[in-house]
Length: 200
Image (cartoon, rainbow, N blue to C red):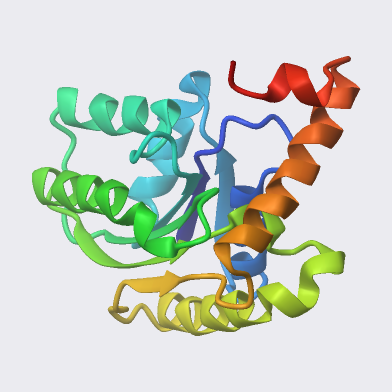
């Protein structure tokens, strides 16, 4: 069985959950969990019944999110061992370059060592916010193709290389322009002007 853990703090519509649902569509027996403290024991029960665990989360300051880190610490503090469990990681960031996720992946690798789990690969996605959105389908095609290959490795329980996805069809200038459009739109929803969003 597979246990899929969504480590995004967003209450709904997270990209991390989108990736997990994409992966789970190719799996047979699985459970998806939102990572919340009051569900730790339920998640651990599922982990005990599984041979494969998939974490999905966004990059926050070169690190997994605080809710992911809290869960990892919970397992270590209670000296819980995940002997021979296969761990796969799906991580996305707001940077265009997927390599920005490497430090967070190294944190996950070290955690796997401490709990005796088997780190079995990751996919590090740049510009994660645009994946899965219909209007950016052409741009995100390469990322989704790599996600399919990664999903196949998970399904077969094979070790995967660490896959880095960079949005090559976007240069930095264009990507920043698109990001600013998004931020300005969100600003308006919160009664903020473009000048309010700029550094003073």
